[in-house]
Image 1 (tube, rainbow, N blue to C red):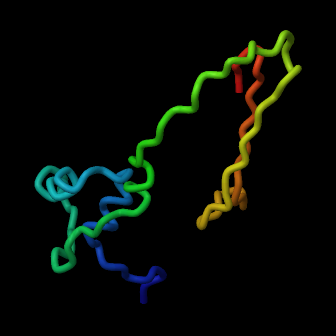
Image 2: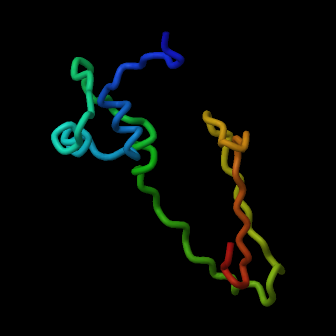
Image 3: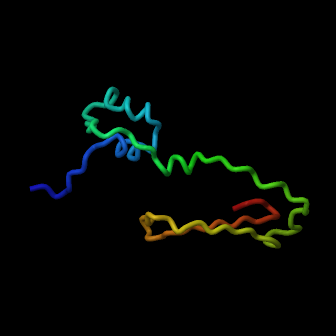
Length: 105
């Protein structure tokens, strides 16, 4: 009896397990690593997280306003989320604060 469910070791699974490496690199893994098994009947699919991560955007225009005179006079923040996958600490969002004077997070 097995305690774990058997999942197919597809190209997509190895792509994700190896930090979203490129398609050509993931296909070389069985050639350079001992014991790696891949179910080759399913081709490597397009990875949505990879597409989103590589999507370029134009930079924000430079501000005409001078920076804040003192630390914490002006703080910018950005809230990101909710993400579809929860973190190990049970979180779905993250927030960033940026001090305008020092430009530090």
